[in-house]
Image 1 (cartoon, rainbow, N blue to C red):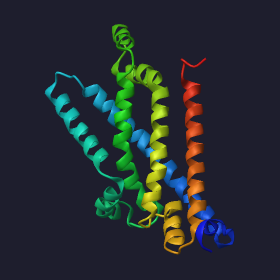
Image 2 (image 1 turned 90 degrees about the vertical axis):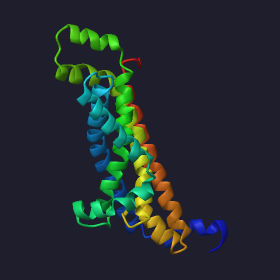
Image 3 (image 1 turned 180 degrees about the vertical axis):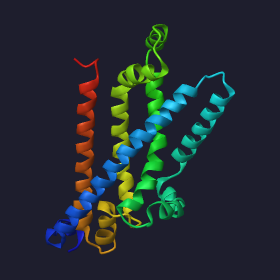
Length: 228
């Protein structure tokens, strides 16, 4: 088929392969989100706790972590994948497949989310933190009882934005053999001149994005005390 009709020749779609690629994309995204949420939270917490400190050690830690965040936020994802190929090979034993995409996905997104976590903490009313310190709360209590609850809506909103970026990253990773819908759209769609596969893959990716956005928005509203 030629022209726009080539996008709707659904008999050319291997639906079993499409289903498998969809689950690979979802799996890569979910595993990456969990790792990014944990790692990004600690990066943001470290940046927040060491910012404005008079201690030389704390300032040095803040500078080093901030440098790491800024550097990895600046590297385009497709370049980062290639850059990390030796590291990926050493860590997971392969550079092909969904598992091989995880190191690049996590390392690219964790600094981005870490900066969002830091900003969320800085938006908390200083009076609340000072009141907690005045009442004798320990640093651990302040982190778990004040910082985390007060910033939770912003943290959920931030991880939702990050998750949507990760879905796009999985598609790019798929173009170099990481599996998922990106890989399917490139190999079975573009390289095979099968526009229907490319279209269906794109639609499914959009639906996945909508689903994550809906869940993230719902969770944010549930924990936001400002929403009546």
